[in-house]
Picture (cartoon, rainbow, N blue to C red):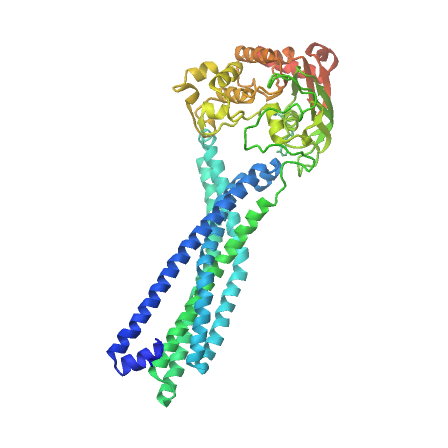
Length: 563
Ligand SMILES: Nc1ncnc2c1ncn2[C@@H]1O[C@H](COP(=O)(O)OP(=O)(O)OP(=O)(O)O)[C@@H](O)[C@H]1O
């Protein structure tokens, strides 16, 4: 009976003998085995790639979801560029590791164990060389992995820095040109770029040393096998077929060990990236523990339900809500001093309250607290008698229309930006909001009207147009409370007056940050902030008499306006 297809027999009976029929028979077995191996490899590569891509997609979605839910100060702490990097580059590193792990970690150990088994069966004495070589390789790779981890952490940090500098420079390119600071900025970028290069070289050098060390061990082991085997062949204790077979098994074992080694070379960078991703996933959500449930923001941010806000009644969007601040204090994370101290204020339903004060007095922060961009460090904000922390985010978003001081528009169309507030809004609702924000005339004049394109950040619109679109967006869903942060700063007097009249006509509760005397005069009441403290509240005329800080603001503003 024939022996099994075996490299040793193939050589001794087929090549040394020679026996063509044996060569053909054994060769056919080997070709069949190779085909099976090929199919298995292709299958493993396909499944591995699929798994790695799925892992990448899931991780990206998780990091992005967490970044959206992050508290604002967490986003600031991590940095926008770093968050982008973690969502893309870091996920890519983990994905690459997964791909290699999926394809290598199944086949390589099997091939290695199979090779060791066959080598032991072939020649126990020669197998001793394997017992020395494999731990040597493991030691070399382990040493490199340990040393590589801090180097890759440094590399990822420098990638973040370079991205941050680049992003800042590209978004600020107009300012750079206006102040002819190209040389300065080029130097700043060069510094970041060179630091990145150095970090990449440090980690690259380590990996460059590892490969020759591994190859040296592999080739030295082959030399030792041939040398020992050669002597034993001369003694007549080893046949040429056995030596050739052993060399084949040795190559199989070492190839498998090197494949696993390549995985460990990817490990430290993937590990660092995974740590950075985990840091984002572990950040606190902007919702405080007291926050109640509520529909997720991803859906349509429908109007707050009467059940969600006690006291709410009437048809959607026509409600008026009281907004109360009770002893509100706020300190930005990491800041030594609070920005707001003990602010108590009630904005009555349907009332228009103007907030004024010197630069940095805390006006935007106050509005941010009302919109629940962040939670107060002391006291509470109540809407319709309910603590806003107890409201679902969608409920709150439905009840409040917020236009921040620096309006942000997304790339898309005018309509898609306006529908951010109410995805199902019809064109008539959009035009109504545009009319209120005095933006209807310029939108009507755009080619495409509501479908006119908006470039990233609204860069194809003027500051005033962006501001009006942001105000319109805040009004589309007819919120119970409008929070407008300095909406008049880029508007002329006539447009400002039209916007005020439109807001009055809507009769919603409104809190408007402004320094414009005309707007202060027209408001039902004015709130005056000075270094985070509420120093005056009342109608314009009363405050002129009773509040020196207000008088100063008005005097400064009127002289400016008169000039
Ligand atoms: N994200 C932040 N982190 C730390 N401090 C902040 C942050 N935002 C604002 N501040 C600080 O809080 C204070 C109040 O800022 P805020 O923007 O509320 O003032 P403001 O009255 O709206 O000013 P302006 O009229 O100039 O817009 C400022 O001293 C500012 O430096």
